[in-house]
Length: 194
Image (cartoon, rainbow, N blue to C red):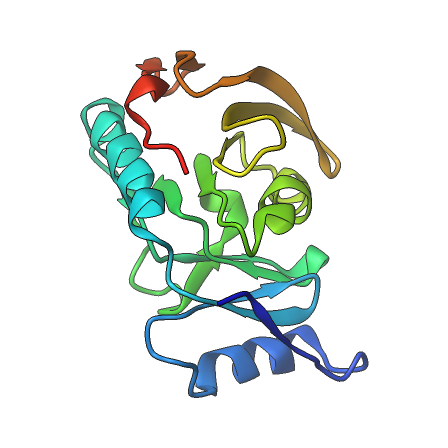
């Protein structure tokens, strides 16, 4: 199954779009995001996709601050890019009780991890990093299982406007150094391919 988009009225406000996203009955188990003002419904990620995310999370837990958490289904809001993104992993402080139950401001995130699926690889490679850079998220890790030429891992950082600087680009098997505040050498040889 591939991703489905739900067209919205271009004149609709951000608040109306978020309300529609929050209140609509979406298919069970699907991932529903707002990407550049368009609601996108994707199937649940495949097993290998989830294995990669779980292995990254397992490596991150020992190095994160006690008041941070690793979220797997938390939406991050980027209103300036008309985005409500649900990354595979978000490392962020635990939200205050006064914050929204459905999402947090993207600017709170310290790290976003996206593992590509065949149906949405373009969003993970282009649209989402631009939104995350705009929000000022310090690090964006892209695990691209479907990259032309074979699986790759790219770490982006130092956001300026809607662009990141590439801090690391390599293939599965090449270690990736996540800089401070993580200080972690991530072994990508344990990532399943395909």
